[in-house]
Length: 171
Image (cartoon, rainbow, N blue to C red; front, side, top):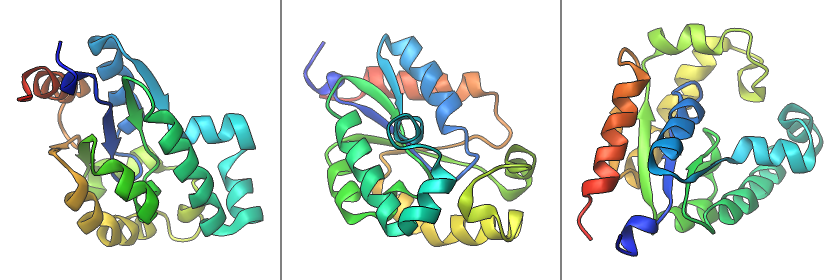
């Protein structure tokens, strides 16, 4: 296996696109470790809603950047929180990695985020999701090497596409 194929695979996209579910399965198929940066932040610093409240969004994004940099140190599959790409330092670090953008339609995501404790959705629900997703879409697109929609496809098909892409990517 070439050095190129050892590079991390990073999943980005809006809240509810399936980054964690897809990432776990891709990692298993590739025989790699899986890291969810949101879970790492919670493990080290506590619940994300509390961090947003105590540190504000800028302070949280700093913790998130550190978690991303740490996660990218190995041959892993990494799932990033939806807003991780807002930090310029995080974006700069992702430019040398293989980045998969998972997209989802508002109709498909509505049931996925219902009852969520995600801080940015506390006021506005699906309308807030639509606004946030639209604001971030150009950033996601600028970083993505591969884009896949998870709205109406079985996750197994999305996983198959990512694994095939990683295994056939030119070196």
